[in-house]
Length: 357
Image 1 (cartoon, rainbow, N blue to C red):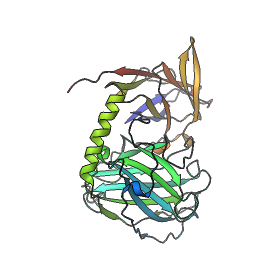
Image 2: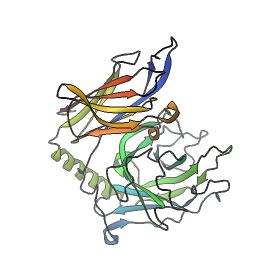
Image 3: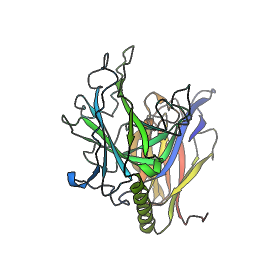
Image 4: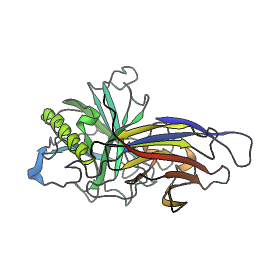
């Protein structure tokens, strides 16, 4: 969801308009039984061994941007969790997703090839899983680092919005050292049918005039254990509800000082969890998550804002995240640019019993 908010400059009459994108999502940490398990080959339920011939030869690509293959994997412990892999031709640099101009993603769609084109616009489902942006760490196995699935409406890049479906990610080795970006998605959360399609793309932009992109070929796949995914998802949901005693953590926000529209309500989203997460895109160089304790505001964490102040509508990769298991009084303070006023977003976190429907 995106909110357009005007911000008052410190010493000019003109209005500075920016895009404030807020998506409030709950974070299930260690609630699903298979969330952070490692498994060996005997635990694998499905490994189709994709042979993904590239649809381009990588001409004009910056070294390190080429894709070698893709992969799919499902473990017996959770048939609802689909692990997807983008395997690079070369090894990743030390921190590939930290301001290197790298851009890569997996596209997942159905019911047929090219339904996402502007001429067709008839995808029943179309999602992209994009790379993380300036992550706090680079795990080598599944952990609490994750990105979000983006939903497109019928066609590519139409009404793109983040979903509540998270994708834990990590970097591993397949053919070379640290050459594979892997992530895990819930088949049921995204509503992926038994038959679906996918492809991956990659590029590195270092300021060259023509940015070349590497695409894999389009793959159509049938998941033979699709009925087990629904059973596993229902079981996981029941386990999560038991752990959280059936209560939900709800988060909402209001714009405060520094914004023209003070008190502008930012939608409340609730989900069963023992923790919460808040995602926001701001143009200031820095933002602090602060908690009110001992009668004063105390800094919990500082993160960098979006480079050049551009918040692309619906693109989570240009955001940063805060999360905490505590139900206290929080706010976000954005600052660091003398041209613009320091701004605040006040957060309200509460635990509620969900309303019966």
